[in-house]
Every structure is written in C-alpha cells, then in structure tokens.
Length: 151
Image (cartoon, rainbow, N blue to C red; front, side):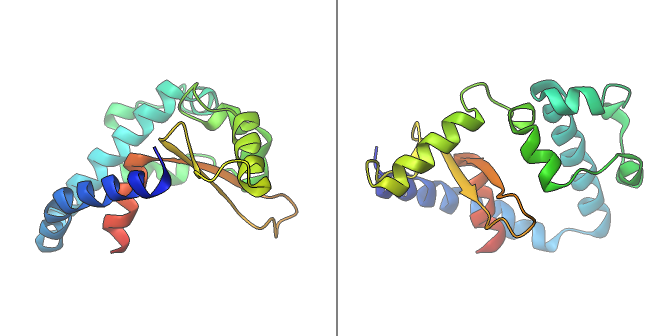
C-alpha cells in the first residue's frame, strides 16, 4: 500500500471511533477516573509483557491493582536512556532500531516514498536538542487514537 491509501483507511476508521471519543466529553469525574485506571493498568500490562525494559522495571509491580496515585513510585527515564535501550522498549519483534534507521534513510534518500514500514509502522524522529535524536515508532492504532484526541 502507499501512504495515501493507508491514511485514507485510517481516516475512515477514525470516523467510526470518533463518536466514542465525543461521548467521553460528557463523562463524570468518576467515569474519567475509572477509565484512567483501567487504561493505565492495560498500558502497564502490555509494557510489562512485551518489552524487555518494563518487564525488568515492573517485575515487582502488581499491575492488576495499580492506581494513578502510585505513578510517582515508578522510576522515570529520559530520552537518552530510552534511545540507548531502544530495542528493549519496542513492543513488537517486527521492528528494531536498525530497521527504523534503515527505513528512515530510504525515505531521506528518496528510494522509498512510503513513510510506513511494512504498511503499519511510522517512525518519528525528534531534532536532537538534548544531544541525541529521538526515534519513536507509532503503529496504525496509535495514529488513529492521536487523531481522535487532537481533532
């Protein structure tokens, strides 16, 4: 597929899920808190199960009973630490730092016009103002959700 086809599909799917996002605007404080807790636990479960880094960091954390008030107990990491262990943060074995860099080089060189790797992953880079350029991978579902949150 090409970029235009992928993004057209994404926009069609966004139109389908947008009503759910709009409905959230009328939620009570309690509903928001319940959703945040559920989403946080799901995020931590995925991170713990699918990344080497978080399986280490969260090894002693009961993610099924974790709550927002406990967030300050987790140790933060910065972009440089993240970049030094990039492959340990990625939740799929389909993508590595080397694959991401090679794909982005193909885009820069003009030998590939589709920014989506394997038609499902988009690599996003920062400028490197901290001394090290950040490189991040977004999948189609993340892109859908970001569009809903920012639309």
